[in-house]
Length: 333
Image (cartoon, rainbow, N blue to C red; front, side, top):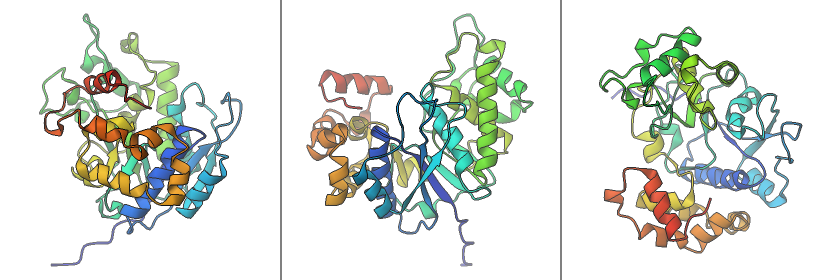
């Protein structure tokens, strides 16, 4: 067989800041280093700078956390919030892209992600961006008397001069949410972070400042990033089919979001990776400071949650899973 062409080098970025995200950043970095020895790009932990956009200083100051990130070869990357901040922290994933090296391919991951396989083996086509398809139909929420999905999404494509028809999944019925390009922003990638970030910022701010009339009954908080993201991806020639299935949100990464949810619904392998990654004493020293990890992982409350669910017959709606965990008083976030 002919040799495969070498994979393009790329960087990885997650958001880190004081509080929950700093601990998740350590866990992400630890899982990347343990599970993906072939990854040879840079790992950036993008941290918002203190300033008027924040009520409190968002920077990471804890010495043990900073020491662990350094030991995991993660580079702290400060960035400024010129548009978003405390009022819309999801905007961090937009504004941080301007601080990344220009022209170098990147993959953004939400910090509440575990790397579970070799990231270097993922066949990214950085010329065609994409994002996570592990999502529910959370936006829009059409009203009884309209407009429907098609009219709402078309109004956004029209606003930015994009071709709406070519974005549709025609295998899905009209007015079914899956017919329309929609992603979870838990990961996304492209060949140039600054070009992607600038367009992401332009689209998000334009939608927030002057939404089409069809959005009059639709909430943009917290959905603004996920409303703008498919438009950005489509504008750069990407789409839902740009990355083969089974890698991200599959064998190579797990966007767990909350530790009780991880134990309730993820595979035995994901749980095994998590529990192995957190064992080194120098990592344990940091992560035990965060109550959800301390109680759910180290004190093994997660296994009590796991015993409550049959992974082969999980409820179709995540809210049902959450409610059951909360009723048992095992929910932590």
